[in-house]
Amino acid sequence: MGNRQRQNFTAHAAAVVNSALARAGVDIQVLHGADLDLSFPGDGASNDSNTLERAVAGADAVVLATPEYHGTYSAFMKLVIESLGYPSALRGKPVAMLGVAGGRLGATKSLEQLRNTCAHTGALVLPGAVSVAHAKEAFLETGECVLGEVKQSLEGLADTVLNFLHQYVQPRHVLENMIAAGIDVPWSPDRS
Image (tube, rainbow, N blue to C red; front, side):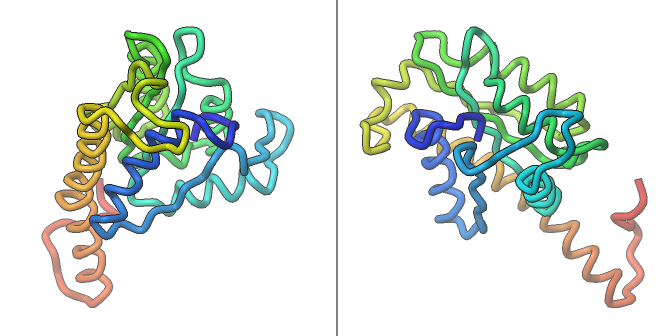
């Protein structure tokens, strides 16, 4: 999560996505910015940096959620990406993106920049990034999403992740299991 505040609109939006994924049976691990003490590049990796990198490396897919600040994604989101090592733990990883903003234009600028950054790391940026505009109108203080079209878009982002997992990740695990069992397959996940 690209925000260090405990209760925020980005967390509310991400919770809708996570709930939809969990209802579909996906094992969710939420890494909230308020729980992470990340080091700046060059300062050495903190324990939380190592934990974050291992969690992302072990995930089948990642959802990055960021607020838009001054026309770009948050500095904390940049620190999250910097904490994922080189080569990045995002390399080859399907990444869905969610941006939240208070204005009428939403987080389109931040998502465009985040897409470029993630692509540069080698991530497989999934289509259909969601930009939430007028965040104060979309969520109650309790976190409940009160705008149907916003909730539908957020649940659609979860569907994008699920579709990718079902089409590409699950078959890869099936092939890996076949190879481990000694069954000859025409394609090996270790080959590019």
